[in-house]
Length: 595
Image (cartoon, rainbow, N blue to C red; front, side, top):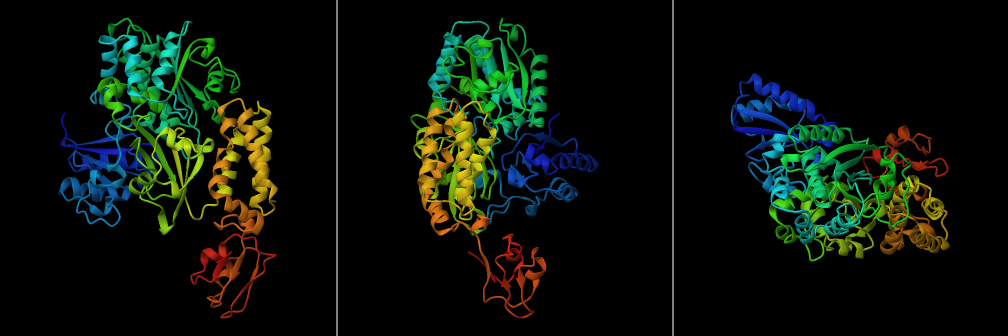
């Protein structure tokens, strides 16, 4: 049956948490009630990307973008737009400052600078229907490699594309495949690392929720290239929706003869299983991940040998992350040259990022390599909310670093980002404004890595604990000038002596904030002040001459630290004040100063 209109309801985790499933159900019911069910089809898709605006419905083929929908909006929307032909502008996303009559997705800044490869099916298919994926050229790349290419051809195509691993390390994907293909030993294994655990990162989870077959097809092609017959998707159990859709996709692929024995009658055998991880951040490191798959405690092992030579069960193993695998079918179908034409000399193609933090347009984006940080944050991300100034962006998660606003023209490629002291990582971008304390941010990320350390290395286990204690002391106003030197000394020892990437990169947030925001450390230590007015221990709340004695602050103060008669300027007892900020938040007369 052909439908004149498709309503693509975002059913990614963010929108689901806002009630997307209920909106979808009510749309179906209302459309049927109005007798439009022969003309309009409601489709639940994966993540549409613009997560801050959920629940989202995109009207195809018109590309009208409805946002922040509630169940109460549905009857009016169906009546006006789909029965009477009058799009409801108040429910649409209209770019700030624009006077567009009926804005379409191509006119929304969040979308129009993106370039989709890994996310090519974003919002266009039902992730739980294999036919939807096939209708978008799905599994044609697999057919091509089974009928037109030998393993050497496949490896060469991936090498020529310039694709580098999107999991953080950026190692050339084709070279990794070639090493594994040429390694002696049988059987060989393929692994998809979906153990995404960086704070603020949800790229891999969203790809699996939106387009699981692209990952499966990529793994099939990789298995054909290196000669593997078994594959594992290692995904943390905290992602139930992604796991459900991946299980569905694997079952459908088996039913269609795309997994299992003698795939497509070409004598190629390959099957997949899912291994759920318990959520240990260190299991994102490949040797710890393989130990977990083998039923051991997830702890890193010394390299070499590298997994491509001796990995899972001591056999040659190829590990790539979700985004890397999702790129493979596109490269095979469109050609290495086309992929390599996008990006910079040493960083080809596109990169998926999750934009979070102090930014207007929170969401999932895919951009061409070579775009600048400033373009992502302001043109796509819509800038910083509430008129605040952009201060820095954390890239690479807890293993990365903070890039200051003055380096906003830095282009997005592996070498340029690394030169700042940060890393590309798997693709998390946490944006910070002028109210963010950079010492506190360093403490936050170091606290995460310290808690997630497996404890195997003394320098990682104990060294990060000592660094964290120093940072806490500085934030509490008890820091001394020698602390900065101690932080740098400990950071160098931890980086040089830790066994795996977790320990080797754990000091990065501290080192980059010291590099670019040393003055904030010095203000905390020397002046006992937090320039961002964020660290509670260093704040002082005082009442200024704007006070009219309304007594509202007196009533909300939990410790009765504020005294004063009505219509007379009040006072705050600094010994009783716990710096909760309740008085500042409730005062309408800007009579509270925070120093």
